[in-house]
Image (cartoon, rainbow, N blue to C red; front, side, top):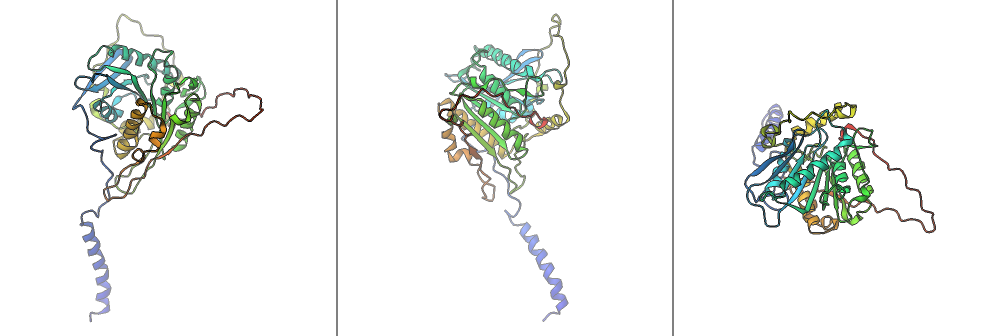
Length: 398
């Protein structure tokens, strides 16, 4: 029998050897998140191998257009208008999503409705509407772009969400096609009024009842996005509850790298879409620039600058493929087919986030329909229309 001292030494040595051996066993390392699906919504079974990029407009009023190389289908291409977050004016920050959409068959428009430090938020909706209208007119006779104006979707990120809602509300007035879908990722940046920092909502009661509205928020910095999403849903009063759906993406640290549903997570950089690689229109030397009057809301606050930095540095992961790209793909398919949000809510595939490499399920998306407006009490006198409530604008919501 070995001495007691040797037994005491042997025990930690044996434990160390066992742990070392375990580390060398395949599968013992941290689980990895699911990759982009090979096919289906959010997947990589693309119809086009490359993307055509075109610059439209004039100096200071530019829209970038993207579509898959090759001839357009006979019915034309569905249109996805991507409205960026306040300050995130370089399409590179959304390049991965733009490429997914373009290679999947969409004509993608990226209107640069903001010149950082020179554009007032109150003017952004009018500028965006003009850019989209001019871009569609320029591409109307392009046999490869061939926009299908009966299948238009608006994608907004942060302050791009109230912009998308405003564009939808005034689509007919501005000569724009009525969108079939408003897809809002991390809604935010809603201002109290035109004099406050942020995007003030217009009369969303003018949004067509046939429009499908889907918002996606994350569980990080979630309160502001949740308040903004519910505000858009409530103000779009002509759209029935059956055409509205609120989605929540949940962070998951089961494996590595962890999935974090932050405000910046819908962005995903691709250097191939860097604005610096494109030749932008030069200013006309004969045309005098418009008079410029500075105001404080033109500049980014410190928090906005940090958030824009996070957006520009964002990569792509399972949240992009399955929480944003897949949900948009399925929502657009439902909207273009005239289906209600119930089609999405009742689909297990819509909320499924697949599995980590060790087989453990990634946390599913949570979905809910907004509450219908409370019915009026019998015999009660009609109340005066209340002033529109608004979330206080915050830098994190821009």
